[in-house]
Image: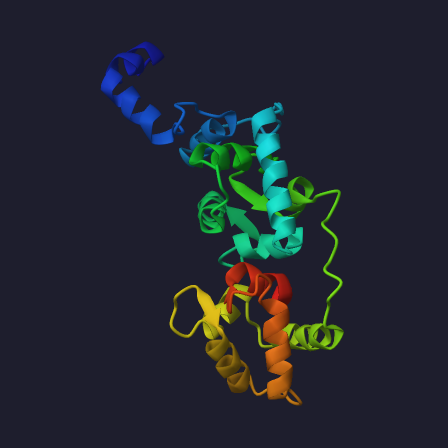
Length: 233
């Protein structure tokens, strides 16, 4: 078929369906989205793609970077939060799902897609830890709270190494603690999970001190973000 014949074979309805499928909420299709769709369809795409600065996306990235810092997450810990399958890279589906879970105010699906386009520097549809860290590292971190329980922090490091030594990804470890699957760990679930782990030398007092250190907002439950900030590797 010639290109002209192919052009006639595609109806305006078909084109409308394609547009609605890949366009964002503001009816804008980003360069990154087009490239990802072309690659998925097996079309040849140049390896060297011109980089365009998306100022709105860069502002959103800075906003997200500060949000991560406020939650006590380093870029490496946040990467583990996004990398749900522990594959060492973040797919676009994982990227969007993680942002939805974070519930950052005023961040739309279109913002998320534009951020993904900026973070995925080589436009291959995956975000590596190097790409993630480059974009979400912040220059100024909020000062740590002076009321740090150093003994609890030492025990937390011991527990983190125990989790790693058992071959558990941080999400798998959280699922073990979250016994009823409601996405938060209560004080009772926290104590029960630690007792089941049978870590040598870990007393009930140690567990209570760890809980106080991990429950950053002091609301009596541990969220996945709080858990990752302390036990992420």
